Length: 142
Image (cartoon, rainbow, N blue to C red; front, side):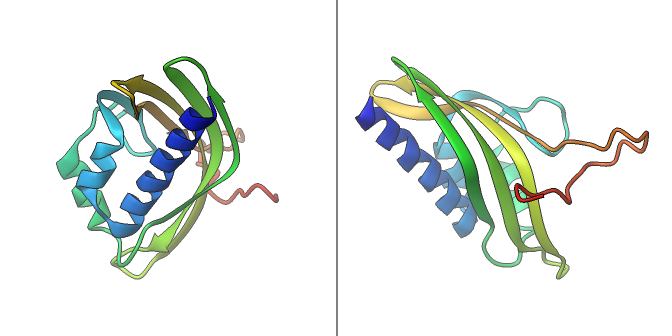
């Protein structure tokens, strides 16, 4: 299992590097072809979309930095899952600085000896005051 944990950790590091490098093909390569994506952006459920990822990456001026905190990874025979608090940072092409924490659950599947992300679910909490405003101002220290 240690080797599998290391391979999954390396996969997540490749995903982070692919975001940093704004490499849509490398991002796609981290996922299983049939991966289900519940991202922060609409729609509610999505599949991998290389052109959509490339278009989103083009909205950033410079690298997209994604860090994980409070990671919990559980590995079993051919399947694994993780939970984490993620932070995305960078500057948009309009000059807006972004720094947002969000929650992520990922499911991993081992196929032919290689681990890939089979499900990626990201979310932000929202304020329960009736505004339905996303609580993007939270951080783990808060």
